[in-house]
Image (cartoon, rainbow, N blue to C red; front, side, top):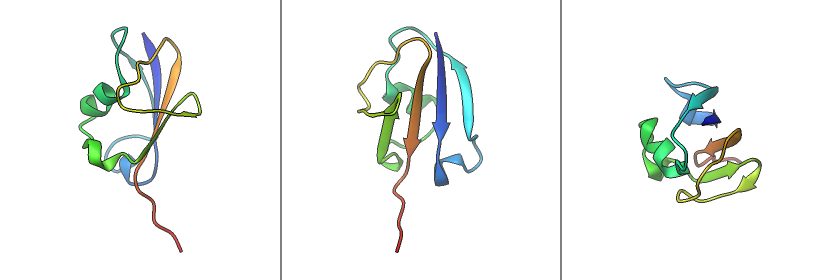
Length: 74
């Protein structure tokens, strides 16, 4: 199944901004995070198709997973 993964801020370091992946059916957001060697504690916010989601959420064909770390500001 085809899924697009978008990484933001510090999660992009030594990785990518956006990447299309071929993954097995029923893969979860948490499994994708593991495959990318990202620590679960690094991901503070995740969206599937623009909607807030959780690591146990399963993705479907042509979904977009967006991952964000903690972002400080002033």
